[in-house]
Figure (cartoon, rainbow, N blue to C red):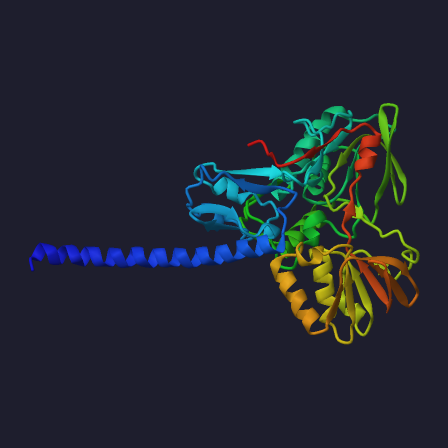
Length: 437
């Protein structure tokens, strides 16, 4: 055996081992991705309506750059191509599009079969109605850093259209990323403004993220504050940072004040809230797509025991707590309350979406708790009446009465679409429409 042959083997064998190891790991990952995709297809989990990626297989080279960039593990490689294997995990970070080396990924609004309503907005963030501006999630942009940019840019436009001495320059509705940025920009530019927020804290949709959820994957730049150089930050860290900004800048936000009506009065607007009415030259709608909590519209719903989000599970110990809804919020509320001692937790939804809409982790935990009789799941059921100590369900014509001490309704929110259309704002429905690059 020649020395050159032995030398070749010394180099070739490690290379072959490395290739075999790489291919073995890749096959193992693909089996996991295929299993996730099969679970998605079997369970009928739909693609997200909000911002989400669509991959062009003719361009995709299977580099896995998008898979590594996705903080929610929504993407995988199947048959050498990127696939949205867990669409219910996607919350529209957009990191996958930036990471793709061949521009095979486009972010889109809605799907071919399920449309999403988005108001018409100019590059200045003004709608077709002069004086009405929209920034952030309501305009279809769920990315935090984009919402922050839009809030500031909207104020740059509004600054050129100030009101007279008898009115505000702008009323900012919402204190999520776009609303917070807009409020800081308004303060920086010395505008006369009021910021109202229907919740009791800032953060918008971020406030309702699950605990320790990764909220942002890129730095942001806020008015007055400047650049915040963090590439990964959890929900709790982000909310703490924002609250610190509000305290240090002296920014005033009217919490627990919900916009109820918006009307045109001459060259200005009247914004009626749950507390008072403001006259303003401009209005910036920086609300999320959760909207105002959707009510059931049934007798007894006005009772204090009925709430529309879970705040503290411990307060429900040793109680009969009914949860309504078919998404992650309902699943997480039911799981949290069921973990408390002495609780009985029925969970009801109008269809069978509780088996498809929540994230896989929540679905598996629900199945486990149901098997343990910790949660009783009612599908295809509507709440008919809420009594002082009971609740009446109609499950496909069969009436069921259950003991009840408290109710948590997680039925989503109602957007101000009718209000917008009433004052002339154009709203279009998008079916898989790409976001401009």
